[in-house]
Image (cartoon, rainbow, N blue to C red; front, side, top):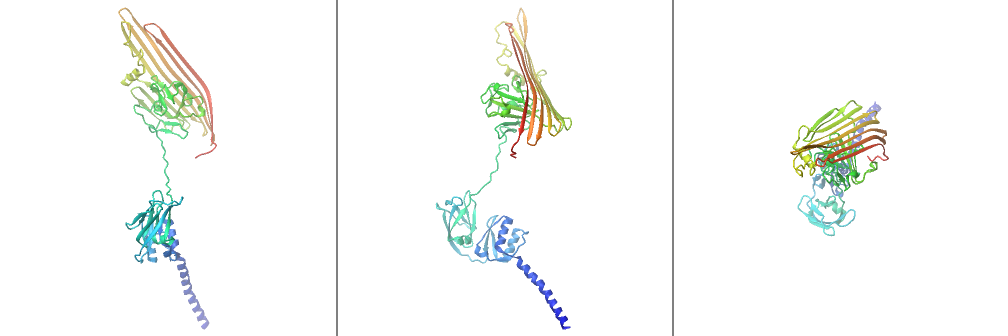
Length: 508
């Protein structure tokens, strides 16, 4: 009976001792050096603590719950250690003893640069929580008298990181400590100048200027986004007679320019003999201007290149519009036939057949000033001279895009530009009446077929077969001398182009 009772007693003792032993181990494991807790709080909450190492180097405290907020953790540490946490700023916190007596001391130091180790003259040394402050001299030296031993100082200098340190920590370094300030590194945001003069006019890295016709606004004096008139607003580009037919790039002549419409050379650029552009702005999507160095693929241009591009992708939906001003009326449309075929079409025609607006009259007088068409009063013969003009212009453009496969795209381009002027003079006197008609017809037709092929991700080709035709027929009859001057100019250009684009390095 005694042995059985002894065994029960041993089991009873072990049952109660083991739990207490485990609790003791757990409590010891929850203890953590106070310095380690401070370092972890600095990383978790992005704060900095200012303290004296002698006060906290031997402290062991209960491990806090790091999921709590910073004020809750600091309140718990204050209860466990008796230390006080004072907020110097939003980021810096000073640790002081709550029972420390107000002891006043004198401090000194020297402020230097971290990289050059040169002294910093004019650095500001401020005692936080008081009105005491001073600045460093030419040697970087400073001194502050009669400040509390548990105070904290802030050292700042323009262009350098601010240093906050407690007086107690400063004294542990040396009687007159050297404070090192690091240069402040600030990351500047990229400044990109995108728009020039107006929205949609951008300068690219290779020095070319691109005009996104769909996004740029109108320049002063323009009622619609006329491409060739807007080009003249760029530096280095002008026109001696303020027309689109005579554009001078970097002082060059008109025939030294290369003007392209979908990679097809154009020999006629304007309506109304150069007063407005012959290219419909609502079908032209992008214009690239080379004036300080031309890409090798354009070849023969001497002064510069103006390359106009119409839409290159399939339209997402069918849409269109009507344009009307005091000079012409027109329409344009984007037709989404299906997911493989899209058509772009536009056309304009003058309206002076129906109504001669004040704008048309100004344009007409501007174009034919100091000519016999507008100068009817300066005649030497006696009698009456009457004149009647019949002027009209139109342009028609068509583009079809067929996406045969994901890698193959075919395009068909067509453009027709026409200007027509008939001028009839009638001279009559008491004896006879004579009438003569002068004519001028200016016409351009251009077309091409393009095949674009993406062979690989970094290799593509573009093949173009094109033809462009320009015709000028003019006859001028002098009603007084019966002399006739006939002018005929005809240009036909056909050709083929093949471009290959191979990307060696991807810079993205």
